[in-house]
Length: 492
View 1: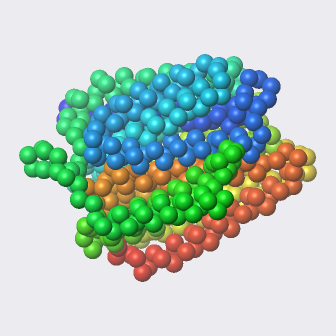
View 2 (view 1 turned 90 degrees about the vertical axis):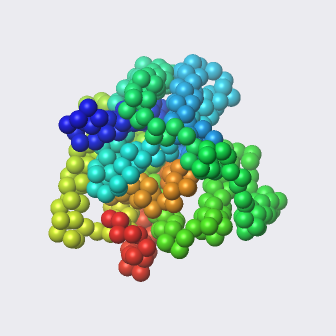
View 3 (view 1 turned 45 degrees about the vertical axis):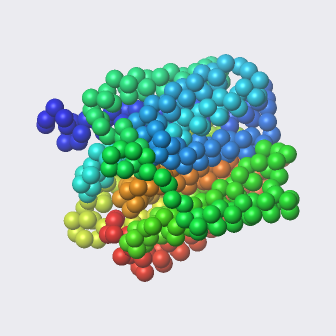
């Protein structure tokens, strides 16, 4: 083991992993208590109704990931990835500091906005630098992303444990303050170790530079203007026919979802037909497009752990040993750390025997596992509607299946995006990957808004609707796998 490596990997990987770990501590810790704080009417919370609270939660988590797209663009074109990470971390910390003090609703939303903006700068670019550490690609880069992913989940586990306890048992704003401290620790790690161990990686913008380092003019294709015009016309029509509504948080969340879907469709159309891609690159972008929508549905189900599943845990589930209800969200991080080495080992075992499932098959498996998890929730909801507390095993096994599904989709999808993305659009497409998470979070928040304490009888049907969606979309992706097998470049 040389001075430049640790456990066979560049030391820069561990600098990035620890930075991301503390950022995820702050994000997941704060997210664990956010919806409860918004709904709380008796202990200093916002006192919102479920529909408004769920929509606010969805808009926030949506914005956090949506802003990864402009964050990736700024890194590619203006800042470089390293500066984007640094400025993003500072902005996140400032946002959590704002949240740490009791204030008006407007100031609270300002804090949420700062966290969202900072995460949009940091999140896609730190993942991109991980890929740059392994220009040779291959299994070593996949192993690096597994290490990186375990850092994410270690941060999540610590954040939910500490922030969840402080928020629910001491005071909401103590929890928000702990998130600020965590991001400060992440910035310290990055400030002192990024330069010696990352060297030139991610220092400069990637595109629009000539061989001499001068900026080259951007040539916009006529088709790009046509697509932009079509998008503007569509949005204007939706606005004037009353489809978009802005007089409530739920209306804003729904409208933003429609806008985001339209923007993503136009973005991929422009990338495919007006960006000068080769035929091979175009085929790979088609695969990224399919993975994107598979990921949207997956995260729409998975990310309800902070919304509908949190409400279920708080109101309708047994709490073993009197633990805070937010600690159920920790089950995912715990199971990630438990199962990640096993799942990775299974892929290696299957690869040696040449029966490792293709990329799209893994995505389909992930959706089937989410469906299975929600079927367990259907059974738990049928207990809850009788006025009884559901066993803690309901959420436990739901998280087991969701976590294994996450391990089938998230590290594989993250690695696939770094491999299949055209180089000049890498950070942008990493941003697009996180936009899938944004949409999933938005839909998860809107879904949680349907939890009406006066109409609990609808719970089983609500969870069953997710089961059917995941089964149907998973089956479609499974069917597409065979005709598109060659387009994936052999990625598994």
